[in-house]
Amino acid sequence: MPILNRIKIVLAESLNTGIWITCQLEKSNRTVSYIVQSDFETIVEIAKCLNVRVADLIKESE
Image (cartoon, rainbow, N blue to C red; front, top):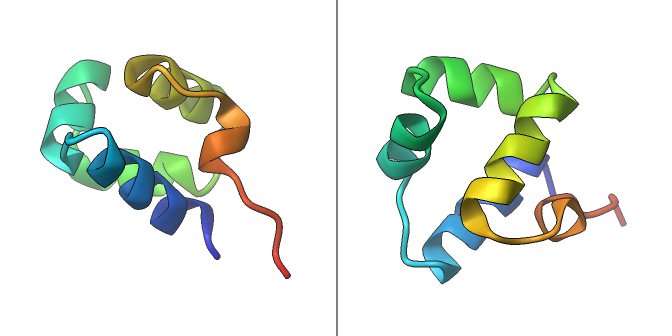
């Protein structure tokens, strides 16, 4: 499962939206989508905003 899809699941479980995370990070939705796929530092920021572990956002491919 791609990282972006896991983040969407965690957002839904925490009753937040993609718009909410873009506001928390002060970045555009497009930027967040791009960064999530390539920038680990931003993934760490997203985890902090959601109050979850980075591992909760990343799942190894099966």
